[in-house]
Length: 276
Ligand code: AMP
Ligand code: MN
Ligand code: MN
Ligand code: MN
Image (cartoon, rainbow, N blue to C red; front, side, top):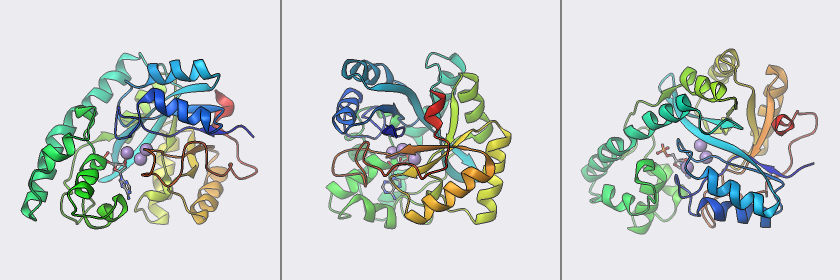
């Protein structure tokens, strides 16, 4: 089976390596087909594609869009779209524009529990300031000694009910699918095992996603347990979704799984990359 990694990040969003270095590392790890999927931003795609071309590795355009569904933050990965599509680009610009103001509100909340200077601290990690994310805040909280590592940050801070979390208006599910499909791409549910949804709500979400033209879900993901792989493999078959595989690599030492190092897709699923 091809070694396909269709979910990862560069410094264009909250990854630690440049887009070209992500492609080089993927090729060195034996990846046959890579999609770079920065949050809400397409700027890394040309340099990642150039590097992939030079290394003989197949490359697919990608993006991970931040959306809300029933007040829950969910991520939709778009694959193999036309990156110059104007509607997709203006939609993503809209998603990005709210991030700075959100980061300022996060910083105010952290100051209330005695953590000063978080906005400036997080910004120092954001190579692309338009893409300031919770990952940049998490790095600052580790650097300043508030937490010992990224994992403990997301246990005690920056998540609903904890200091530093603020509500935010993201794109709608319908918008994100319209942008991706309108640009000729394939919409994929990112890491479904990560969402705090009951079984029934997950089924409703997957039904909405399918009704709006969604075609695939990540079955193999860096953040999935074997139980998640089993469950989402079954749901992919039941709903007729194609299956995707993506590490969600953000950087050396910071991610659970390196580029191209996930286990293969389980038998009997239809890989999404057969479309590309
Ligand atoms: P944002 O898009 O600003 O809401 O930030 C979300 C990002 O924070 C994700 O893409 C991850 O990079 C990071 N993140 C969220 N939850 C966790 C977690 N539990 N462990 C590590 N990183 C996380
Ligand atoms: Mn991220
Ligand atoms: Mn995600
Ligand atoms: Mn991701």
